[in-house]
Image 1 (cartoon, rainbow, N blue to C red):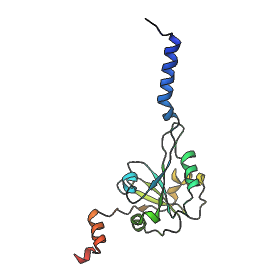
Image 2 (image 1 turned 135 degrees about the vertical axis):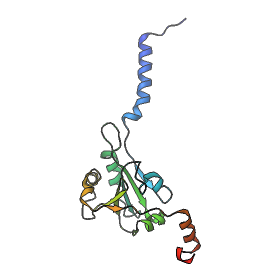
Image 3 (image 1 turned 30 degrees about the vertical axis):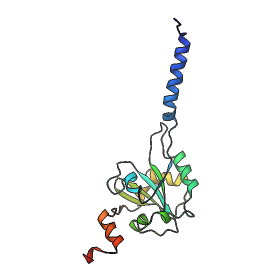
Image 4 (image 1 turned 180 degrees about the vertical axis):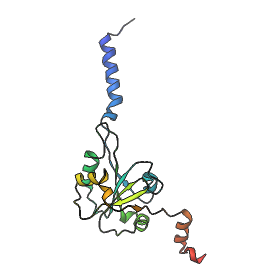
Length: 171
């Protein structure tokens, strides 16, 4: 019978604990890519935002400043313990026509919206689009701009009528 030395047992236990806890210790937010199919499910913007606050940049591939949002997610969106303060996302409007219509946006310029507890707040275009300024907005600066109601997502039957070229009035 071979007995392990106590140090071997402790070092194996420590290695196992580090392996299991390491992902938790270094959790950081990522930039989510949202589209027509994932936006409402992930953000729950019009139903009360039970997935937390979302700072979302809408625009074309050319207008979205991805490096700024990567920096924002990495440096500002989580707390010291890895808890998420707010989610960071981008929507490429050229690939999301339903969201472009829903939020009445032009696909050429970038628009940044914060979704907070069922309401939305537009980031002022006059402010700099730096990671620090966007974080300040998401963490409380949004209170300085008007509250807007989140437009509801179209129901399946509304989408079907639109596909068929029929409006509510034609019925």
